[in-house]
Length: 250
Image (cartoon, rainbow, N blue to C red; front, side, top):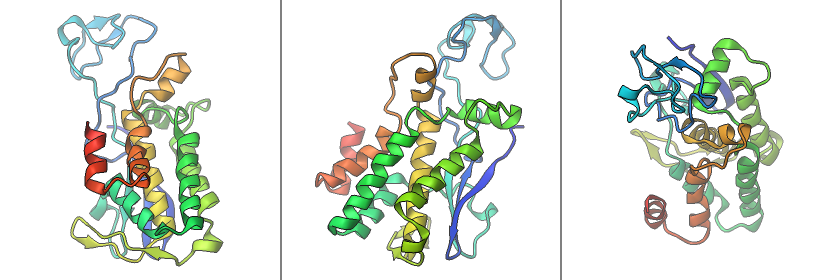
């Protein structure tokens, strides 16, 4: 059973943002699991065959997909709810982005803060956070040379505090709308920023290959963090929400 991880990133006005490995939908691992072509046990669950296949799969399972060992999520716990109430309470990136764009509301100073925040997320996260399986393995084996889950949580908190310092934004709220039958009006701006960054960081962790490719001198083949944050730049360019979502599916 994988070690469970729940770490508070930020808490304000009864809202809590957490980094957790207790998501329910582990994603396919895009990284070669046997990069050095060693003789290893097949990575397909329940198979004991030996293989030197780069993907870590034996001949019988070479066409199968290998899933990450855990699903990392950015979880939002609203007031009067418990962690167990909200194990997979992870609002969509697009809804987070729309709420923050609404908060900026064509005010140049706020638009710049948001632009700088999004740019900093990409700069600090892309190629720097390990994939889901590696992050989970480090949680269990404590490899000091690798970024840990606590390091990821600290990174997220630091970027949010840099662009939305508590002294300036404590008590400032926005209208987030409804998610899973709960109205999230009066959501603190810092909480919205934290859940957005935690969510898109988990996209890089769960679906990306950038960290692995950087470590092995390869060129990434996946969109990584650019996929969820592409919505922000399309909305910034004037695309309505529906069209922005359609463009990213194209």
